[in-house]
Each structure stands twice: as structure tokens, then as C-alpha cells.
Image 1: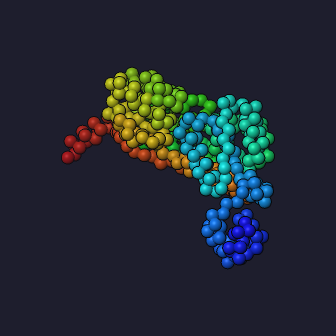
Image 2: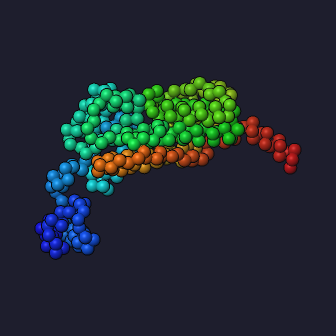
Image 3: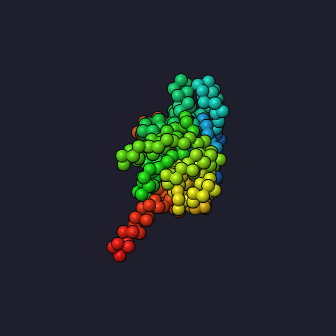
Length: 340
């Protein structure tokens, strides 16, 4: 710091104010200090910065379900945003989601003196457990499908499922069958809710749900329950992996996708455009949700009172796995013959 002060021609107190982000420094002095810092490649020792600011410049993340695309992408977004802001990230993964496990995970992060905690565990049990845990640092929850709240970062997966289902209905399918995620996941509940809402908006009674497990094998097993039913013409799978398995099972059973059965997925995972056929799906920027969670926790750490963050919204990605209902195509062809 003394070398920076000497090069900038200012006192070391002025250098301290600039590097700590404090006020009371003129624009000219701030500019001189910043140029000297860049020239000397000065980096402040983390312990010194922590002592001066009463912060550790680290955030904790309590995670569950990182094998799934959404949570893993959200974590990547958190880590990138933290790094850009000069924070480190400490990760604690949950094996169980009861109160004791959650309390132990939070306690571990608090013992590490993190400045704030993000809970990236999108299952009902984790959020129920959080209600029984005292947290004495700023807290933000990743919450698929919920309403905006000052402690939540939300992905509107209800709307995403509604988009997928409505797309299939607009293609002339009389109903849409749903391969859901496993019970207890917030994303499962949100996607079921959006699917139901789209059907009921058209006056259609929702058919029975076939529950999957997020995996391609699970999607294949679920589709086996639908493949022999000739009235099934449209399937909305709650994630792309289950859609992949469903497409294979349907094709193997002689129900060709999309000629006989249309399939729409959810997530738009990398490579979904290379499925056979290319998968129509719903895209969410889960990394953006992670970035918003990190930005939100930084504001809380700084003593701010940020309002509810707006939800991350879905985008329907239309590719080749869904087409008009076969009877609709026949009706359109007959109409064209009558009215050439």
C-alpha cells in the first residue's frame, strides 16, 4: 500500500479509502490511486481486507440435487458472479434434507464465517427444514415456481410448463399426457401446475400423471405405459432427459415421434438440438437465476433492502419433436381439396 501511495502521490489513508470502497475521496485522487494499483498490480491481502471491512468476502451455498441441470447451472452462475465481485464460494452438499442436516450444513458455513448463504436445494423438504433453522447471516433461497419474495430468486416454471402444453394443444392435440418429475421437488409441482392450468384453460380434464425420476431410463419406463394407448398423441416430459427416454420407447413401440406422437421436453439441455428428432423444449437461463441470487445476497450483505427479484422467465424452443395432430393434418388436407 505504501508503494501505491508513493506512486499516486497521496497518503496511504487515501489509498485505503479507495481500495476499501469508502467515501471521502475526490475523483482525481481515486483515479490516481486506481491507475497506481493497476500499474503495480496491487492485490490486497484477504485478511487485511476482512479486518478493515468486517467481512470475509465469502458466501456459502447449501446444495441438493446438483446432478440435475437446473441446480448445477444455477451454481455455476453463483460462482461466476461471486468471482467477479471478489467473493469466494464455499459449497456444502446435503445428503438428507431434514432439519438436523440443514442445521449442520448452515452451521458449518457460519463456522467458516461466510457473509451470507444461498440455499440451492429445490425440494419441499429442504425448505421445510430451513423453517426450523436459525440463520444469523443474510439468506437467499432458489425457489422454482414460487412468487417473488425478498429472500427468493424465482424461476417461473409454472409458465414454462403452460407454454409447453399450450404449444401441443395449439397443434390440434385433444389432450396432453404428462411425464412428471418425482414427488417432493419444487420443479415437479410447478410444472404439474402449469400443465394443469393450460389444459383447464381449454376445458380439458387433465389425464392421469405418469411419475418419472428425471432420468432417461425413467422417462423410457413412463412412456412404456403410454405407448400402447392409441389415443395418446402428445406428451409433455418434465425434463429433457425423460423426453429422450420417452422418444426411444415410443419409436421402439412403433409410435413414431413426431408422426404419431409429439413430445416436448423442459430445460433445453446442451445437445437437445441433436436428439432424433431435435427436441422441442422450454429454455430457462438457470445460470442467470444463480447470478441474481448472488447479486441479491451481496446487496443484503451490504446492508441494503432489495425488493423481490423478478422471476427468470421461460422461452419455448420449437424444433422437430412436435407436429400437428394427424387428424388435424387430414382435416386440413380435405379442406384444401374442397377449396383449392
